[in-house]
Length: 257
Image 1 (cartoon, rainbow, N blue to C red):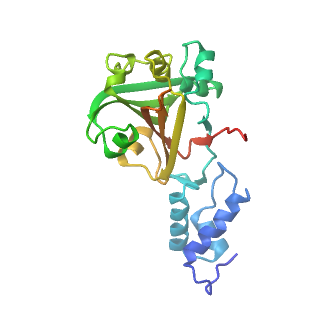
Image 2: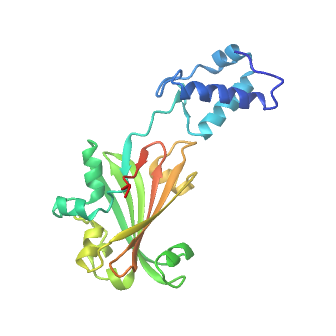
Image 3: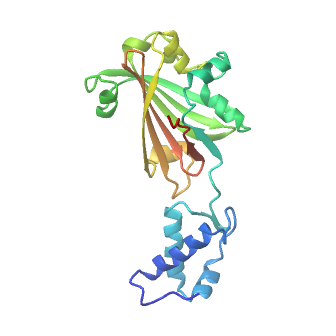
């Protein structure tokens, strides 16, 4: 199929659109190898430069990956499900009887082994975090930062921010694993989360995020900011989780009532 010189779009945009449609229709199946640059150039009567630019667009969109010496491949669908509705669920915590946190439960249900590496610091609250926790800007807050793994692969980054007057001298200030989960610790401290507010945005990763998560070029991330409120409607935690787009499907279960 040749490209249309009368089309106002650049030729590489036209070719990218054709390949995008073939991926959507599964004519180029997920995980499969893309035709070579030479094959695409011949099939579409295009220059090699047009082909390279088109493939670059698809890589930037996260539809195609390239492997040195092996060619380009259609990206496989995300493998892990992030059940946002049950993350932090009190019902799930009680069912686990303090043996697992909800992250571990979700990962193990999907046939993998969960693991977390945590650090704990006291930092001045950024404008975003201070506003979410109803604190003055630069107020010291505790932050528990985690790299979260499924088997040996880094899966998520999670930073939890807490008012110091709530978590000082608690397990949350210890970087060791909190087996029962930090929501259970808040519950033990008399500040059990009773409702959440979620804000979700999508963007390309920072250099630090890409390095920690071993992200390939062109992979976007989801940024979920969850604010937890206690029975007095006081914000007690802001959880910022980074979800690589090539590894997650984000799921919510909502009542229709």
